[in-house]
Length: 85
Image 1 (cartoon, rainbow, N blue to C red):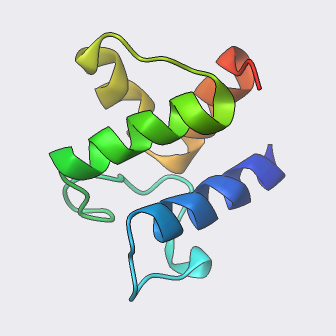
Image 2: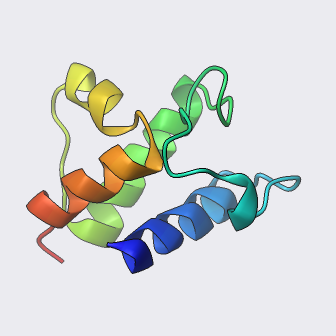
């Protein structure tokens, strides 16, 4: 699970071009939206595409995404349970 968390941090930083953020800056429990990394709805769309492309997970319900993208921990847990790739 730790390897997946590290991979997610690296992918989020790269995909969203977070130039001033390093892997060490992202805490596993920090919120990804709002006060944490400060991601927005456009970033959420990018994360949804990443889940589909990299892990074979298709999100159909936007409300589901809100819970999944709460933190690195919640994303890693969801991916480990649902991934097809």
